[in-house]
Length: 225
Image (cartoon, rainbow, N blue to C red):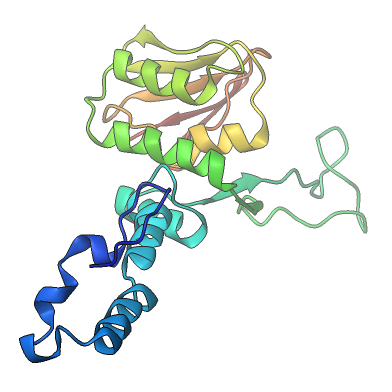
């Protein structure tokens, strides 16, 4: 039996089963037939497709593109983030805003733009969400997730403020994408009914999640239900 030698760690189809055992005995001694059989096995070798399937989809660590999006559906986190966009609206004298014929009226809805996360960053986000899915919503688990995602940028941790209030604290300034990950992506779980702030090095609380919003002089706080 002819066996192909592979150097990538995968076996060829002829290594997977005894080809000769599939040929009727009256044809087994025909060099021509056996040559055709062995050649066909190599031509339609399924290990190539199986290898690509494993690397591109089944193995989350090597999945790419739309296959990584499939993992996002399974784990429950989208590749696309909604990034808030700063827009100037019409305002009266003495308040924040622009005069007539300069800016539109505020419609009551926030303006966002969609940002598609690159594969490498999306994989890291998926692994964090997967950890969140199987972890208790306690500070040690949340700290582990924060450090995994943001440890390269500085210190990030959860502060228990008491009275059903907690704060995500960052000793660096979050980029708009990082802010969206923490605030609106749904990666980080939270205890039910707990008021959550996001505090950066600039010491400005940011919007945490859509819900019953409380506007304060220090920034935006939000009650997570």
